[in-house]
Length: 114
Image 1 (tube, rainbow, N blue to C red):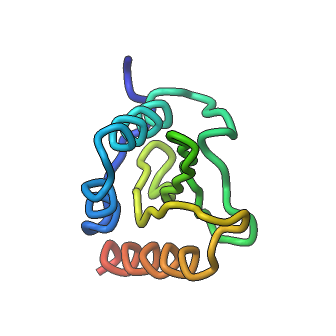
Image 2: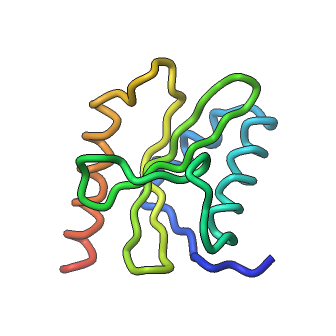
Image 3: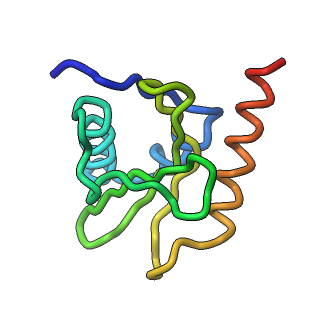
């Protein structure tokens, strides 16, 4: 399937998280990131803007009863940058994970503008 968005990783944050997961979770993470990169209108079940942020989104993954989130943002319309990821263990997304994603997004933008 043809990509409608290019996916890039900022630093080693997401890849480090990915490598710590078992093969089943890795397969599901790859599948959902694939859906996000190849689907013009991604269903909210997989992709959602994080309320109260300046352009942060979360890729939503469920595998074997576990919930995972990958924070990301659009550098340009079709260029998606993956930041940090975590396993969600409570209903609300932990503030420290959102704060980390904001920090990483700002770092990325500062580096790009140099």
